[in-house]
Length: 202
Ligand SMILES: C[S@@+](CC[C@H](N)C(=O)[O-])C[C@H]1O[C@@H](n2cnc3c(N)ncnc32)[C@H](O)[C@@H]1O
Image (cartoon, rainbow, N blue to C red; front, side):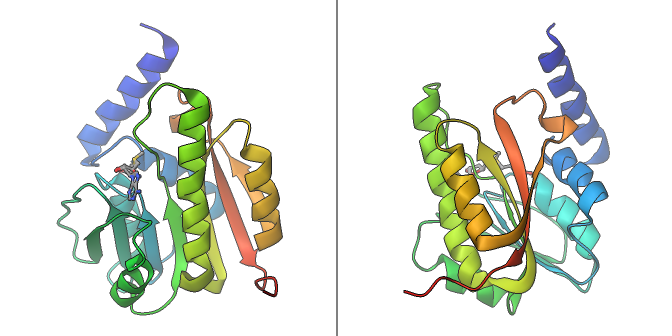
């Protein structure tokens, strides 16, 4: 067994043992230990949330006074009381209003682990993944509090530089995170962004 497969198996087993819907949960746990992304009472929007591992972690961190709203084209089935699941495409024009209503205001944190169904043709997969991320950044303009945080996945490739420039124009601080639980997917990185700048005129 290769090291990457062994690591993937380890996180899968850990997720099962700890009752998480996906091994992805550990990426958010690790990032949160480093950056304290989510705290008690936070309003959290999670895009590309199925099957719900990140939502479970966010739900625990936000606690009973917080709310976690997850959006995905696939169904999300969770028992936690402070979560709301929305089955919708992020490109749907109604998504911002739906999420805002479910949050009961603007978000303290926007999470995005969005990924297309991969074809194996990297340029195509990367372009699709970046389009999804750019859509979340567009939604963040209306959904995120001024002092809020975006934590989003990005497939690395030819278009990465374009997105990094965009992120730096949008936020005062942009930091790259590579969680240990993500090391096997060598071409995925996470970006922790805070300090939303005012939208450019026009
Ligand atoms: C890596 S998975 C997310 C895993 C999740 N963070 C967890 O912890 O369980 C990526 C998700 O993005 C979703 N997705 C892809 N394109 C989408 C779109 N256009 N709108 C909404 N969700 C989408 C997929 O259905 C998939 O569930």
